[in-house]
Length: 145
Image 1 (cartoon, rainbow, N blue to C red):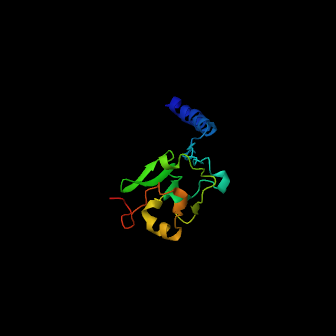
Image 2 (image 1 turned 135 degrees about the vertical axis):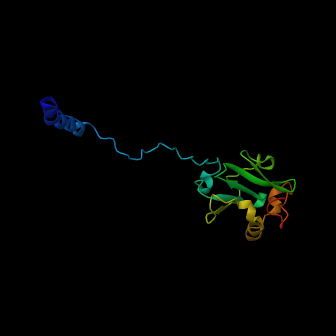
Image 3 (image 1 turned 45 degrees about the vertical axis):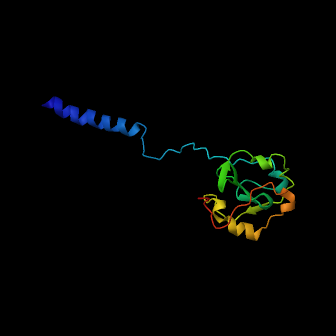
């Protein structure tokens, strides 16, 4: 019995001290190194002071640049189509000299082509620039269905 008492008197406090001295593991949320998807800045951006933080509308070509999706949206075969590369009709166009409208008020989570009748009215195309080579969207069918 004396052994148990000595054990309790001497070893238990030591064990408690050892626990206090040990590093404590707290339940902190660890910071993760989530790398945010860097916006793709197209080659023509610098000429327009564009930083890939908003959608861009090329009114003379009825085409949008969507930085969230990282590419272009244009009218083709009766609907809007997305491509990460330049649409074929823009391959020989110097977009750094093209007329653009930066759509600052539109959330990057939205798709600008859903409101194309509005943009077509607000920023009419100069069809002498595109030589009639660009398909014109048909208002009233925003989803292209």
